[in-house]
Image (cartoon, rainbow, N blue to C red; front, top):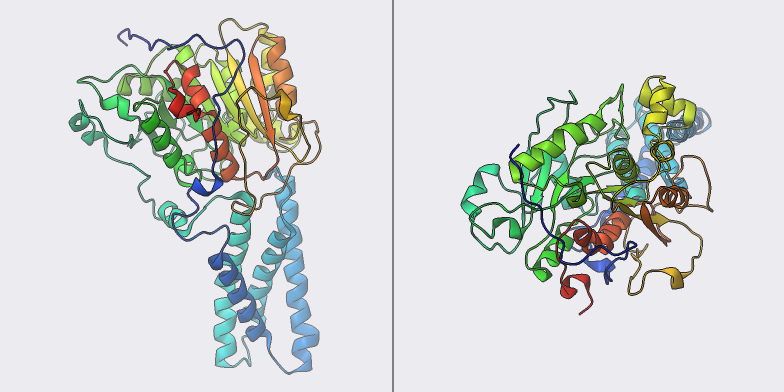
Length: 491
């Protein structure tokens, strides 16, 4: 690869991570762009229709129906709800406790199926129609509650775009980039990329690269810094743009910052929606090798991104936040900055024994190799200017006087976002709760600067977007680009 010049920071990095102030408006997070799936008339309508259809389906006058068949449906519905609850807990699929309403809707979904089967004989035509229609509506009700919990699809349009593999905001083809050279576009563009898995063998989906307006300002591509963007446990590479809806945040930032922002690389760390690799190498795929050995060289070669680790950062949400910390402490030769948004203490797929079995095929040494605390203790003091930011969730109160001067906490209005469960008091283990405090303490022992921002809220994509918004100016400066006062919200 030919040598490249690296962007020169406009100002010297601060001695400790200090974020430019940012004023967040919860109503600007994209909720008003389309029919909301998190609140409003549509979720309520789906749930009401499901209940009405179930009532119509069970309206019978025989004693046998009410004393034998209806109780059977109720019992099987309860069993189904308990089974779903146990599976979720045993697999460690959630950081926060699910709302009780989720298990109620799961039970109703199972009950609706049972009613349709055992109630078909001797039912009138309208009862059969209601029983059949109750099944998709109860399934949709469970999906609505699940979505409200995690905030995955803010709007019906976002859900439809994802299901139909519709284009991301500002998406264009690679072939269009040459024609945009030496122009001054108002917004950046997103291009889908098929990154070869030559070095990792990791079978992955289409990934995406965001190129800011400044990328097109000259006759040749400038050498820009880059930020790897990693989503949560259940994900697609486009989730930051679809579910996180960060496009308006980026557009507002670049408009106020002379078109300048890092290249954003939306990676696939799973290979499929429900394959939780936690960004490690193991039976679920060599995700770590893909991110470090496939993605980075490709972005540097294809988009002329900087090869200097000081100009590379990682931002991750939930399980992706864990990845962000892990990748940085394991590969300081590749990354010098990370943002961990509500991540865990380390790669996590249940308790330690379950994690070793599921993520590493029973190889306990691999757990040690990918545990960030162990990696830092083994590595010792880190050379260079390495820093991280933790945006964490808690129900505890905190001393706002200790926040960096001028910084405004990400604010999540629970009336406008997903209804995710709230974290409890500080805890241990590999859970999200208390992980930031423990990891930051380990960071400081090995000369990695860190700051923790803690706020009350739900483990939702809306919190991830708010945290991204509040950290964008800081991380842009960290990777070596100038940040105007207008872009920080200080004007």
